[in-house]
Amino acid sequence: MSDSGAPDGLALRPLSARSVVLSLLLGTHPPELPARDLVRLVAGFDVGASTARAALSRMAAAGDLRRTDTGYRLSERLLERQRRQDEALRPHTRAWDGDWETLVITATGRGPAARA
Image (cartoon, rainbow, N blue to C red; front, side, top):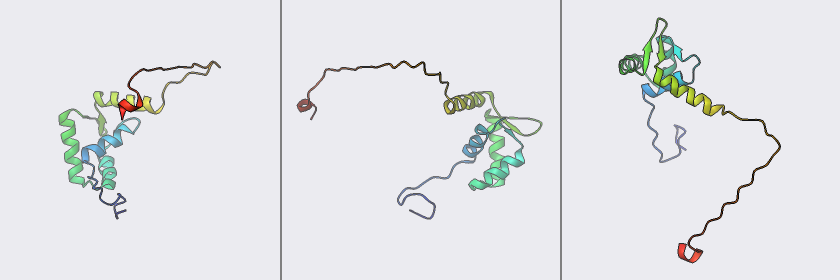
């Protein structure tokens, strides 16, 4: 292991400011934070304050974020992504009715000698 915690020989690229901001907001409910909080939080990922502010402006211009009275919020497109992520973490399940289902799959194909 190297000092960075990565296995030897594995070069890990640092996350971009955009990736860190989106990760923070996608995991936040509601997905809105003041700019000063975003700048403070991304600093923990070695993203400087000026880099973070520039990324926020670029992301708002690109339509990834919306400026609000209190800070920045995910765009509608990214709100849908957040909903899909949340659903994947908590999939819809149904109560077991006590019955089992068995599937039998048969296949014909090449024998072991032909596959080798």
